[in-house]
Image 1 (cartoon, rainbow, N blue to C red):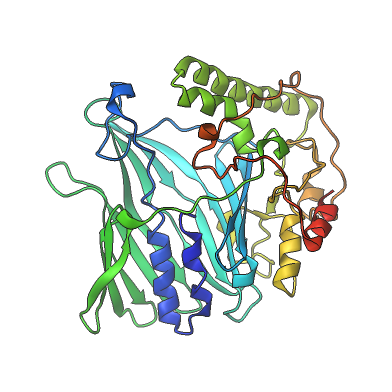
Image 2: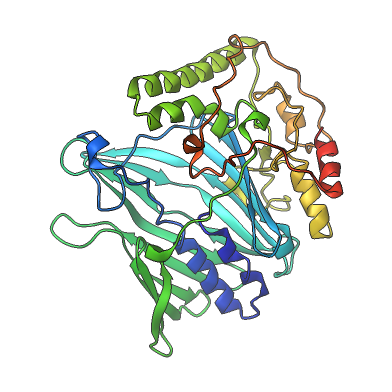
Length: 430
């Protein structure tokens, strides 16, 4: 979600082909984000960088039950809402939900990275999928749906040579209702030629096989689209001039212990101070906590289930038919007849806005999976709290503004006053 504002005008387009092209443009706009540049004077010798950005970093692997919520304020006074949770650890799966109710936009997705080692390279094979829906189009209640896959990710030079991050292989955007599809190839650089970050692809009519447009350029720079009927080629998106839109989040003191920013705060603070020993210790502490919790659940015979997402009810006639590859979907019905009602339903799932409070004290609940998979947050019985795996951790030190850069954290921790309808949603949430 690098540029969620790009989606806002698309549902109002009457031409279905232009809607599809605009979705492809939005999709291609999201791959240019890289880690910030680190000056060579403070950069470890093992890092390699280009002119503006640093090289490949070791990630912080999400832990089971970790959550992140955020929101975007749009110029027209509306908001976009985002909810995500790590729904599986082995294999890793991250489920997410996004909605901009006033604009009839909804996204449900799952990230499923699968690691693969290729000699001097490491790959993350992205087997996840996303469903983008325009609820004011299409015949059914799920609207006009776009099925979107992701390119694979490669870290080159992990043993020797220059370390470089690449996107590679084919990804797809398909809209069965419109009979249109896009095949986008993220081209990796060859050993003896080629260039980094190149793309190519086509948009075609699936019924006739006719190619309507050709795509070319670089996902980190300018991308072009060529109308095959007229031969006209024009700029589709310029990543060099684009600045991604950062989501806002609740203040740290309002966040639960398993929300991403609060969970990894000490690790992030140590990384920014370049204290790698402390960063490693903090990261290891979180990973050990996760292993202790897993051992405790195994000892008690408890099966863990996600808190915010439920299993997909797919198969013929299922309410989630066609969405089986998601595995998990938001555990709430967002079906209000007005955007205002939908906002209340979203905010009843979990706190998203500053000032919302949660009474959920247990981030890894003991719940009967059969109950959890058939109830929504508004009807589920309270979870029984398991015995803690370890003594409560001390409260984190106050975060400096620099510790929260690019994550949406506000300087002020003061909660905002909630409108009456949002207070109602908070009441539903507890």
